[in-house]
Image 1 (spheres, one colour):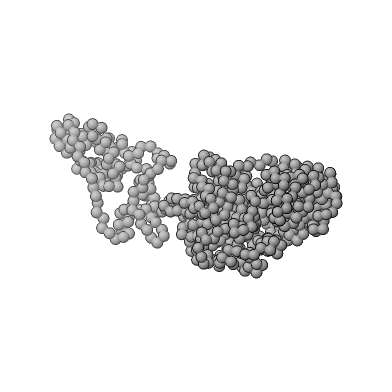
Image 2 (cartoon, rainbow, N blue to C red; image 1 turned 30 degrees about the vertical axis):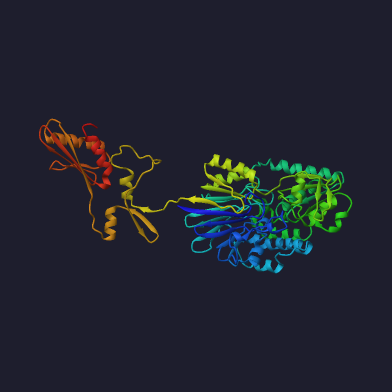
Length: 596
């Protein structure tokens, strides 16, 4: 029996700062290395002292795997590699490697250049960090070292997002990162082989949510947008540069075209061009519809959506603005929110999850007065709407993945404790498997039991799977015990006939035999009793050769011998067998004993 250990350094009963330390088959793997959007102090990054109290982490980790480019999954990577110290391999997909440094640099500018924070990574550190990255293709098996292999699968969620199947010997783990089980307008649904891992580590952001129809949500969203701009109001939609932003842009673009609307739609300057460039570059990662229509018309070439300039904030009249970042915790989206919050005509639509501690989280929980960083109070009069266009799997999607993947155990991360506890009970009841939900810094130990594959001879199978004493066809669902000699040759194991093993090894064979005497006072001659025993054995063992020799002894199978001796009044039946035919010998005793 072996053991898999999992310690969340982030995202343990929490959303944000995903960083999971996995120990499997003696290998240490870090799954994601994110930052927490709700903190501006030391809690922003994972506590790497869990791995090593001091010194570099290279000797303690075999590899780092990044599931996708969102900062809560990759935001601490340059800090770990360049400031704490790690020179080992980092694996991610091609789109993730392309987009990661752009988002990291954008966040660095906000944090360092605008907020003036220290103890943060530099632009040079981001570049050096990305040089350590090894890119992976979907379904490509990567041999990290002699024992450890990883394989990426499509996760939906955002461009380049991947689930990873990690294997060391017979032990295996699937880490989902963030994923979506339903396709949307610009990305396909997550997909993975039925790999039956020992452990599935899955996100549980929406552990208790089952979303309504996507069409109803889209219709409701468009209705709210149209109603607000008709009244002359401004609409702020905080988004991250890639993901939901493109989904909602495609939705509004087609609606504006259909309704012939002239109200301007803007997107944060700079990031949108880069984002759309990468969607065009990695078109194979998008939805089937986009791939099919790409040659005729690129859906990311927007006609109605223009780059936003900060000067437009004060412009009169209605407008729709997509601004980053998505949780109103910094940057342009927060700046616009401050300016527009005081008007009842305006609206902010939050299209996804907001981490605790962010302005987005506070207004979604009903706060109408927000304390800003400079201790100023902001009164929120604008309408606040939450419309889940989240690209995370809901409760139904999580259960669907578990059902398809067939893991032996499940571990929940990236979710809120109460919701996780509800989902944990549901998983245990529905699938009858263990489910874990460790806190940050808490280690879960998962016991794993494995079968050892071995070859066996056909003769041995035939003789032992259909024993001579059985008169009916064997039940394929009924477990059988095989007796044989286990022979190891290199990494290959064989179960063979003992005689064949002795020959193979050049060892003399000694036979161990069992003998039993059965007395009977049956009348008649010895030959009559022998004849009766012979007929009984023929009836009892129809699948096994039963032969009578000239000296009156009866042989059954390969080693069993039955001989009758005595006189007219008292007979002695001797039954002798070798250990491999113990079942036959025992059955003969039961049949021939007078008291049977």
